[in-house]
Image 1 (cartoon, rainbow, N blue to C red):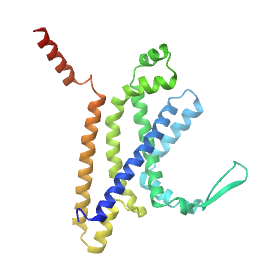
Image 2: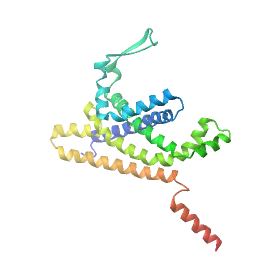
Image 3: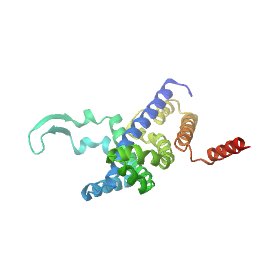
Image 4: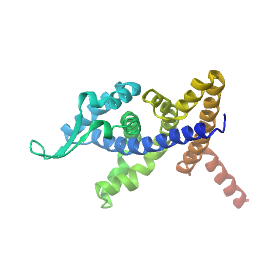
Amino acid sequence: YLFAPTVLLGLSVSIMLTVVTMVLGSALGTALAAGQLAAFAPVRWACVVFVAVFRGVPPLVQLIFWYNLAYLLPNIAVGVPFGPELFTYPTNSIITPLTAAIIGLALHESAYMAEIVRAGILSVDQGQRDAAKAMGFSNWHSFSRVVLPQAMRVIIPPTGSQVIATLKGTSLVSVIAMGDLLHSVQVIYNRTYEVVPMLIVAVIWYLVAVTLLTLLQRRIERHFSRGLSRAVVRKRTVQKLEVAQ
């Protein structure tokens, strides 16, 4: 069953969930990190509370909550605040297992990514920001061209760990009947009663995916650490000595 179409489809769903969740979570997490560092107190505290809430609630609870949102909110309305409603949709037609999985996992990851990005930004010396301001950079250009590239050296390693954790965390969506890798093998062993062999199939694919992600993480880390690693410094020193001789 290692290359069974059902298993491969479940694997592709798990990878798709990981990519979508990390993209959305990273984008929202970066905004939350900037908000936590903002000078405007209401924005700062709103971001702090958001991060605290979604870091504190287990992802499994969030998945079940979003999947059963229709019990709390039967219809989702779009309209003018405190005014007429323009459109109304049944919640069950919007909150499918896929959307519930994406919302739950993305919100959970955004809280962790906010702390990772915030730590990376704070690791950049204040003098770098002052130098960018002295050169006439706007706040956005200073952040995107000076601060963020240097912060990436601190952000990448824990982000790689979060990607791997997210891939493994996609197994939680099986509780809401989402057709991920774990749910796919569960469907098979519920029919064949080969529980342990099918779980081994899932384990093999998770190990393969995690190993590939780890190798990719190492390459990205080397890319953003160019000029700082001891190997590079040692190589340049040797080259200078050879030239001098």
